[in-house]
Image (cartoon, rainbow, N blue to C red; front, top):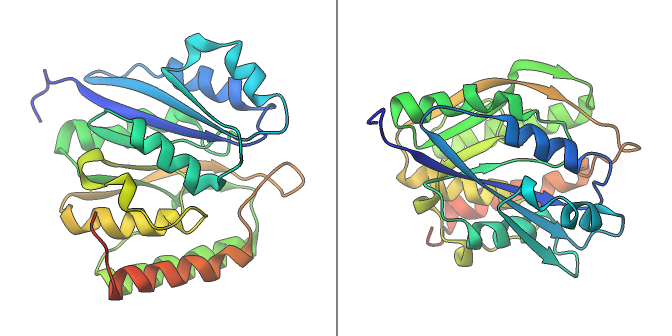
Amino acid sequence: MNPQHQIKVSVIIPVYNEEKTIIDVLEKVNHQKINSISMEIIVINDGSKDHSLELLKNNPKLYTKLINLEKNKGKGGAVREGLKSAVGDYILFQDADMEYDPVEYEKLLEPIIKQDADIVMGSRLKGQEHGGYARNRIGNNFITSLFNLLNNTSFTDIYSGYLIFRRSNIIPSKLRTDGWEQQAEILSKIIRNSSKIYDVPIVYHGRTYEEGKKIKPRHILGIIGTIIREKISPTEN
């Protein structure tokens, strides 16, 4: 990668009832100043019932685009809308709940700046994990192992909230899922045209369900089904 080339990264942030954290997350994202990187920040309010939308409308300087979905479409549906609107060279997924700290961006983007990476995945397994549930870790380890077995990859944490990839490797209208299984579908599609793949250690601050954590063990079955389906009957990227 030419060091003088400015790489544009579209940061996609789905928001559903995150009034306690969304402004803090956006402020942290805006504080990340990285050489060779420019960012557009796309926030998708996914039919929040709390004051998330009001807070976002009152702080327009913290983002580039705000997409307001009147009805909740689920995380995958919100991500799809963000992907449709993105114009960056790369996509970066950011959760709105502070489990994943934007201070990690410099480390995550280093393989893109220096190695022209196609995919960068943040790994909680390689880094430090604070909080979270043991049963979720077991489930994540299983689906990661299954994904690697079927796709000849070596990821350590495919359901990390930090995933960065070339925007050109995904067609939003071709995505078939809207739920938590969508990350498995996206990853299955983008690896087909990617050779430079990096796993980068990150620090993770897990929430409890009482604090608002949304993914649950029951979602694992849908994720497994998506991984298998994308291997047996793949669609266009």
